[in-house]
Image 1 (cartoon, rainbow, N blue to C red):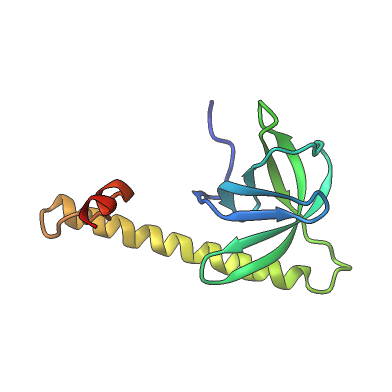
Image 2 (cartoon, rainbow, N blue to C red):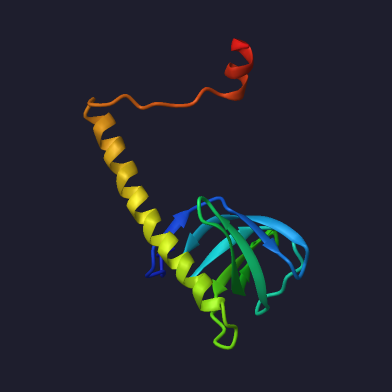
Length: 138
């Protein structure tokens, strides 16, 4: 299937909370327009809901999302972000989110540069030890 999205989508695993349903989930990808949240829920397509997204370094921000589609097994939801003009702080939260997304593209460029240097044998790819390796050394 050909990708129809015009805005970049980034793989991201951020905690999400839906106060209206008192349920937690995690994003699997995000974009300026929306995100996909892995969540077991009884949400319905077409529903507009508030969500809190925990962004690294930034903190928790409040957004509003339109449930565009449900996952095949209803274990997730594709949300399209909406700005509601009559909610005073909504555009400020969305502005913070937008600025955060711009930083992700910069981080991806840094990551690509790092991997290029590894490929050219100028740097060694570093990895953290696994939890089992950590336990063996103690």
